[in-house]
Length: 162
Image 1 (spheres, rainbow, N blue to C red):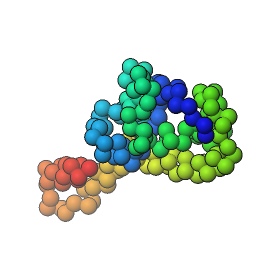
Image 2: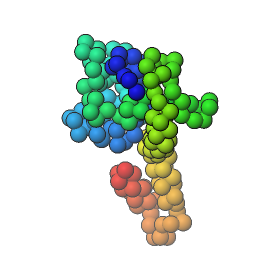
Image 3: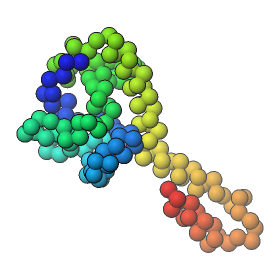
Image 4: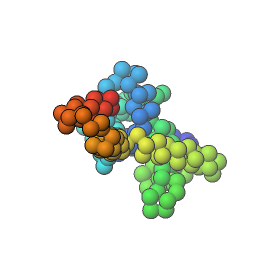
């Protein structure tokens, strides 16, 4: 793609993040609480003053460009829920027409893997898994001599692991 770094894709972004994206950005010294929000059950880049947390509106550059999230790297190739396939976002990106068929074909499987990773990394899913694990520790699994208080302590220790 022939990107001219106009920054339009960084304005009012709703880019979802994988935990790998978050860890990569944290290694640069950023705190995840500063640049992420949980939106619709997924980690999402936070906007600050109408633009991505990492977008410098004066220089029109990304402060984390070398370590930017994979979704940002693949843009303007995005996944269409309506079409159930990767598409080129021609509405938002004025340089989308410069994406080659080869770029689309090679990026599509990477984008599919990223989407699976983002779903797997969902904090909402983590909470559901923790809840299932806690609920699986039912009274049948507990020795008869163990009191209800001991069961509560056991469950809280499991919860602390997460």
